[in-house]
Image (cartoon, rainbow, N blue to C red):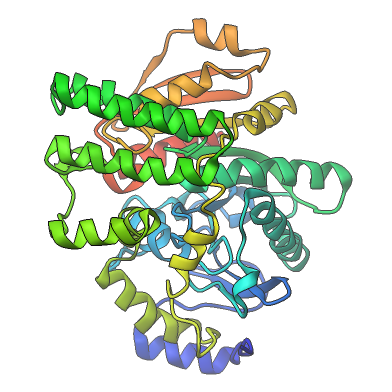
Length: 450
């Protein structure tokens, strides 16, 4: 597969005018309203990673006065350039209408489709997929080194990594490697911190907390609690034995036990129900492979038909550089499957290393999330060996209001030194989708704009 050259600015401008979409410039020059740039970076042989940058569009400030935020999606296999961009924080929604709570008003946004094979990123050979966090982080170092070399205007601007779900696990690993690279002088950037949203940092702590959480909100009875708790203990046993692929399969089984006992609760918002597959289809898929069922639940929802049509239609035409044999999301199932052995591995120790190194770490979680519920997040935070943890734990949280004119509490925050935790109310797994105003306020607080 050959990567197509980028078209001339004139051809692209004509194309975008025809499509009615915002202009995507391809050269680094002073930012103007709606300026965008995108490209591929070959991070390894046969592995090509796609990124898309929007320069901040604040009416009172130049982009150089605002931070740069990289957004990492979950899955693994979920697309930042698609879901994060058009469903959560980008300038336009999936109907290509302006998003009122876009983060672009307070930061330049860098969306990266990672691991390779996600979104518009692609691999030429099946052995080029990442199989572990170390490879994911190594690939991102190649991309960031290339990005900051080509876009020197961002080298001194505070750079933050925000993330969601499995993206948080990747953000932790990437953040630690980036810190080392900056210290060693191999990447020139002003790395300012990571934000881990509803993040898969310690999967088994999440699974173990499902039963008590669901029981506390009347979604399990005594018998259901016992069944879910037993399924969770099976996952814990496999993790403790280092049998991580088996733990992944048992995680899938635990989710099915939850669904059966809750009448199909939505893992992303406990106040709603998941779209039900037929019992025959569900049973058949699980018989064939637990991974198939897990992929259907945790990646497919990031690639709804309408979003897929947008990305593979108007957006693909706008970008102009997508290889002919690459479709948006076409390799996501392979991305997910190749990471099977990595899913249930905890990375609490990486968060510890970030904290001890002085890197700013923010944890934020939606109140209504199940897959990475807040109870599970609090559980792994208590396991940190960071020297500031006792002081952090003794603090009282403070209320946060997204609307200064309203008395309605939007979140709670606890912060000590370089660790902060946000409890986001009335939000599920996708915090910016559910509480856009609060998510924007949190980003501004994390990036020291409030």
